[in-house]
Length: 457
Ligand code: ARG
Image 1 (cartoon, rainbow, N blue to C red):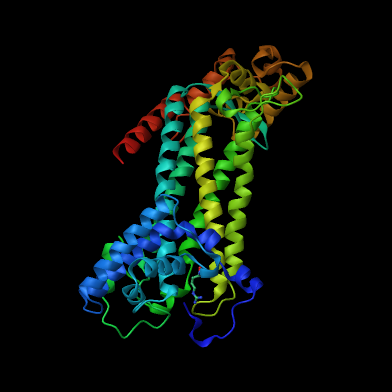
Image 2 (cartoon, rainbow, N blue to C red):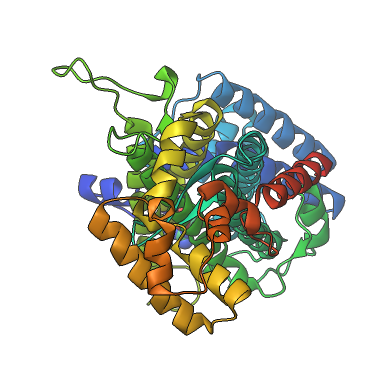
């Protein structure tokens, strides 16, 4: 393809380090789409003849079929997907194939193909995230009043509802989707027509190729068009944050299905056994989701570091952008699918959750709040009084609501039997009606709101 000024063939090592076909063949569909749009535009602008364009497009269609049917032979000697397709086009249609690359460089070609690929992946991820939200919302609605412990420091803190916990992830995922949508908006500009770096003297129409490829507009600067990979970085950054959210949830699932917690049971479909211990039901899918976050973050880090020292415009370093993205985004997709499956199938153990919710004096804040409300104590004093009652309970080895009234009254005389109304976990969650709070009525309202929103999308 570029052999004109060379007399020797590349060394085998040169070929090995240089060839990207093993991974960039994933861009085949996008490369064909880009070439079709480019050829049509060249003809429209009178840069090549309509007959040549028609033959080029026919040839490209045949190549697309060959690739789809697994009949295409990819060659390392031809370096990358762009050269492989162009060489095959020459086999099929002969001389007009050589006209396709007029007013184009592999630099704008690859930037275009890669944007198209990332855009498709982001669209797919968004759909999947919406599906995960729907699964979470359905469970949240079903378990809007199922009491479970809320934790800080992984210590029992205050009772919450299972529905509230699940809706927290719905909110996080909404922001994740927002980040992908932002990335997509900035990504969706057409680099094609930047040529090698400086643009071209041919009278190309970049708006036409932009429209044909679904881009909003051409990129305004040809140097920028071939040089930046911020669209990939943004997608990886959004993916990393999403992966962290999924990983935190996965970690909770791992904890919840231990014998010690016993909050949920995963379905057989999302559990594995042990080859030696017959009793085991291991949450491997959740653990792998947790692990894959490491990979996704690694990809972001790797590409940031590849890009950080590159002068404008293209350097071959940028060829290393693809494997990171090709690894990270499909692994994120798989993680979303796995979490969605686990959420849809998992069976909460309501009794175990409720029992755990009452341990650790989790309604101590409710007691303190009662003293503020009913006995007009300043909160700090109420906190201190409550602390002493907790110490009494702890000394006796009983729950807060089982501390005798006279013992409480000895700590503070204003306490009456009405205190017992606020010490149960149900009373605690029901009372938390502040905006965004865990009260079942709030959770139900939020779940329905989300169901409507997702339906309307
Ligand atoms: N395979 C190359 C890549 O992925 C295509 C661009 C090659 N451009 C060049 N000037 N060598 O980046």
